[in-house]
Amino acid sequence: MRIGIIGGSGYTGVELLRLLSVRDDIEIVFISSRAQAGTRVDALFPSLRGHVDLLFSDPDDVTDASCDLVFYATPNGTAMNQAPALLDKGTRVVDLSADFRLKDIAVWERWYGMTHTCPEWVEKAVYGLPEMYREEIASAQLVANPGCYPTAVQLGFLPLVEAGLVDTGSLIADVKSGITGAGRGASVPNLLAEASDSFKAYGVSGHRHLPEIEQGLANMTAENVSLTFTPHLLPIIRGIHATLYARLNQDVDLQKLFEARFADEPFVDVMPAGAHPETRSVRGTNMCRLAVHQPQGRGTAVVLAVEDNLVKGAAGQAIQNMNLMLGLPETKGLLQPALMP
Image (tube, rainbow, N blue to C red; front, side, top):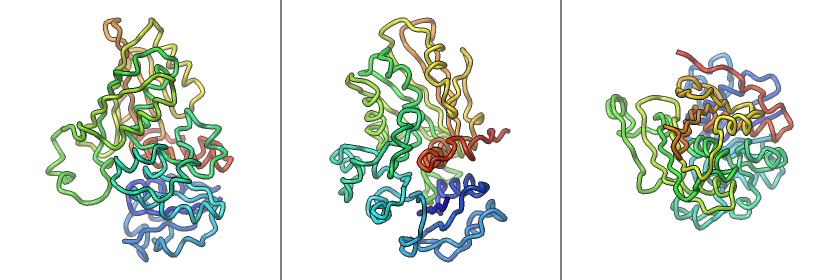
């Protein structure tokens, strides 16, 4: 299969290359970057020496490339302007930005501060959470890859909300992310001396991933959904840890519920009762690990979810979607164990 990557100089771009470059069923035809055009990929990312023998291309020079599928690992606002030309030719696209995630255009424009230029493809796009939309993804031409926070939060809440077991008007998500979630661009808050040995919340009054999460949860239930979502920055490179709270409206064996819901999911691991998953247990993998608790037997379910924000939260899930779209085994190239220590 011939694959292209547009926007390859960021963390998700290099993660796509890391996971795809070792596969014998994939040919990476091009990887583009306007800022790095003409530079060898392995000069920017020495970890890929011996695996990727390509130069970064200018994005304007790759629109005529013949590919089975193209990934957009670009900032918000890019894919909605460029992807239609590929889609109109029949090329399949997985967009890792937020351009096609929200179905309500007015909501998207309010949160992302720009006019959406491609609403017709928003309607056609399939949201790329395989644990909910596997069949739709397999037949889609355009998949909107979920955000990193929304992946962990939706998977953690899924069995509870889907079964109607909780008050969906008072959900709480307390979520922490490693610093790569902020991207590769230089900024003072992301300097080692600024972020190390510290811990803080941000975006408490409103984060762009909130409407995406609420949209996803609403699709699981006929009830109104209201989520309090508070993101935090951890002084680590990779990883997301979500602590989710939901008020139960009936008695249920939570462990059995979660184990049954995810029994056939290759990239969701429900841990034994009483477990506390760690971010390091999923580093470099496409796995989301969950543990569910009911403290003191009271009426609140507490779900713990961990994932690698660059893999299951971005590039790995994008490849999982690619596999489904191209009729390949869903787990192909994504079964490596975590990097420990």
